[in-house]
Length: 192
Image 1 (cartoon, rainbow, N blue to C red):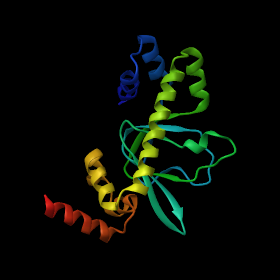
Image 2 (cartoon, rainbow, N blue to C red):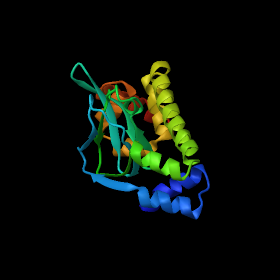
Image 3 (cartoon, rainbow, N blue to C red):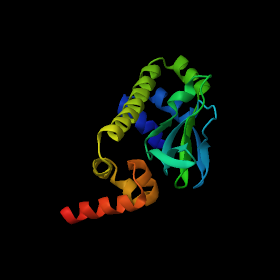
């Protein structure tokens, strides 16, 4: 599992042996059980999580109802973009949908590796830009696509989620009630 993390960075930019070893030595893995929270709405946290295995669901609470806003799975980063400024706290929750193993990062650790390998700041910026872009695309889809279009996009881009995630979380993610998701799925399967 540990090589997944080094391999991830190698896909972004080729690494020297020294850089790969530094990444491997500084990584801190942590395992969580299904149902464990990594972050709760209102908490302050500058930790980042790279998922080695498992799945994390992001949701917000509005009027006592959970609304799923994202899922993070293998080789994705769970980054709370508003958690990086001291005056802000998380507006969302992260809970493990499955037993999950992550690499935990923090600002102190990042600064130490940036000091030793300055080009990692550029790599880090590339990762942050990709995470921001993914979140922006999901938000735009929520405003511009119908629930059926969002489900079809999810089916195409992340088919593994359909099998891994409870239907009521998927329904919440695309913005419908579970019974509406059942109707959408039925329409899609009858048109195939």
